[in-house]
Length: 140
Image 1 (cartoon, rainbow, N blue to C red):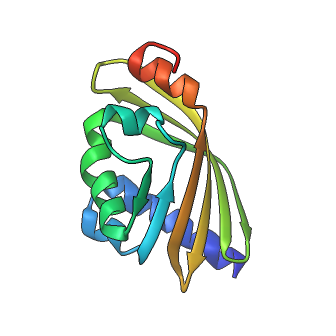
Image 2 (cartoon, one colour):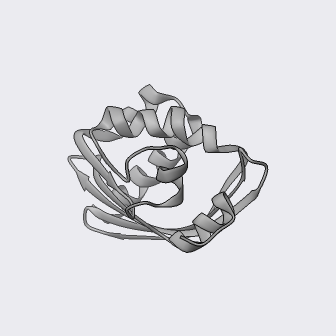
């Protein structure tokens, strides 16, 4: 399943980039979860949760909320995809222009857990202090 798992996650990234809620929703299980560090800068800036439950909530975040903070020039540079069975680990750097005009650059590691060919859980890791500095101009 590893090569197919990698393709599923790569296809999901294309859906995320589309900002099309229906297309995004289609890559997740109904009971999917997306877990990010508590009080990460994105969640704080958008007054949203760091733990999203359900494909509709995740799709809404990626289609509607994310573009309100990361307003243009969003680029994801993938450094590696590691697939083992139904688990795919993605190492990446995201850059963007923020709503306040600041430049954003941060490294991420995301662990995707698949079930029946769909994403069931995402665990997101990033440098939270760096994110706070770029978004709010301060350390958390």
